[in-house]
Length: 275
Figure 1 (cartoon, rainbow, N blue to C red):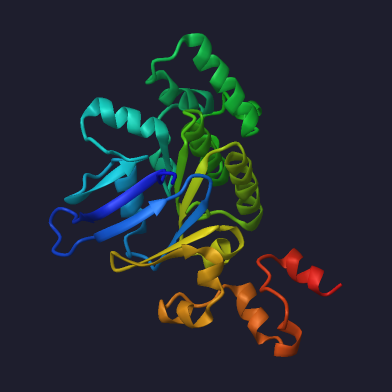
Figure 2 (cartoon, rainbow, N blue to C red; figure 1 turned 90 degrees about the vertical axis):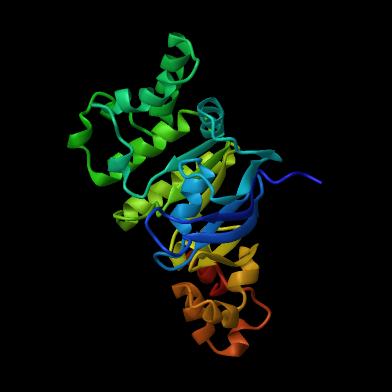
């Protein structure tokens, strides 16, 4: 049996100066290759879980494992850990540290034991992969928010992590920018990187995820294949998530129309039913 890529065992964490844990007694596993979504209302612990996974916060109790090996909080081990796991923050401006696009993407590479030739090669390839060649020398403060998010993601992926964590990746993006972002994520996932997204956007989760995790007030309420969660309207209501828009429209159709058909996950799939 394959070990999970990342595993939480009885993990608890309380922010300094607060009374109640932000996450409590979390047990869950992230499998390699799956597109995993972490759902829940604001303040449920989604971001905290990602920060713990990346080693930015230290568990108060419990432990986090990478393919069976526990996270150790010594500086050298944390550097190795973060080469495997990349984290893109909700606000890209918190992640951009250099003056220009190329300098920012190079920043993380320069902290790795790489030759100048390898740094240059990875920078060039990353600029190509994320269509940033024309922006390479552009000052970061001249970029739009959507461009900044792309640069922040490029900087993470230049390190070639095996697991990519994204915190509310569609925040501040319009529909076109969101579509482009998920085209990038599909490419990243197809290249072998496992992706986990924390979001409260049910429509995004419904269309995208293979596996769904639900948090509520810091507790793990649900973890299953995404179709199992979204295939049960009563469970979604019980978890106080509501219904994705497309699924709500689907259930509004006459039962005779829905018989013998699986609920569509995209508009194009719904259109195919109408042909």
